[in-house]
Length: 317
Length: 317
Image (cartoon, rainbow over all chains, first blue to last red):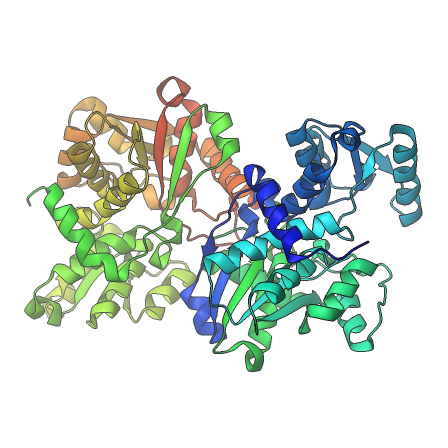
């Protein structure tokens, strides 16, 4: 699979524009004081479906030929990608099936169905998930849209950084969380192609640190069932995202579970916005690493805001 | 006390501009669908100190002569006005004392002190509060800045609607919550002076309905210790705010406690922003009164976002 180019990112941006919000950039004096940096938060929690995933899914769906599209799309996801693909398919008027573990939270199931997606339940194991997806594809001819290891998805996610670079043209660095690596890959392509000298950093849960260990080892390592509150970041890198990250990401910072929750709460409290735990990684990394970030103008991608409001991490402790 | 004019509002806007955020206006497709209206949310939860109260307090403090200012300012508040006045005083470099009931929540006390304000505790009764404030004023010569029944405060709060009318020039109506009436008074002056035919509505908790009953009775009625989750709206109208409301507010809608909590949660869930309960009244009113709001372009003032994240109303039920 070819690595997307900056031209692919610009084409994606144009393609998805009618279906996607240009999200605002917010600042916060208190967080600037605490970090010693100037932070510019790109609010993808305000994005359609509540997460940046809407970008990649729309780009993948609208990149299909009419013949392909007529077959519908399918994926496996218990999170934001499933919702995003269901909505993207609805925007194009085609069918979408999302394979979900039967243990998935009811709000996520309802959300996929709310966007018109079909939900197919499977046992909560990787092999059951793969088998169920394979069956869907064979029986319906649906096109598989992978959650991150896909050139069209990566190009779509990269449109977020293109927007941010336009909204804030003189950033020194940009930081985003890394799970499967779709967002940080697109971000890295956008930054390294258009803003010379800009640093690209990723932040990752210490309890799901496959990207960090891969970068240090110089080879792709896969995580076996990591457990972190940042549920959007449990996936391991794919071959494509690994290749881009190895080439273009300057460093990866880890954050503990306690630091993730503290950073999440800080953003809620001080910025008055709802973000999910996966979203809090970059701020945790910035606060823990002043030697890298203090004095810098830093773009921070806030990835999503889909939270179960009845089960907040600080209420359960 | 003279009623502020539209010129006073424009002067206030210019005076406070260096100290105040021009807050963004957000929209939400889901809430538009649910209401049948086009809603434009003016996000004062993103304002300095987390609430619109920063506007009125800054205007009052910066309207003082140098001689007056040298004496410092004082108020009584267990909420957003105390914080706002402490910060406004700090911006001008003068002293501020806030009389607070000794039962006030620690975060509010810390916030006033964090902005450099002196906190003077009193027994949690009206008479103790008045007596403590009187003592401060007599001993220090501090200028009393009332939370709402004050022309400079009202003019400052009105700057919010001036901004909104500029950001969204073709609204049919505007709605804000009413407690003591400072915000809705300023809003009404702004709208009725500049946007002919625009309706101005207020929303009030059914359990703290003094403004509603006053408007129906044609005379100012005072509430005795109302109890509502919308803690910013427990105050009763003052003589000045009542005069403005009676002249300029088209109607007042009530909302039940359950409807307030439901609307608050809806905004968190769908708009991904943190608002306090008092903020949710307008949306509750809009959803309950489609005969008034459906088909209309409605400006909604979201008043503040200062919430104890450990004690959310839906977690306690």
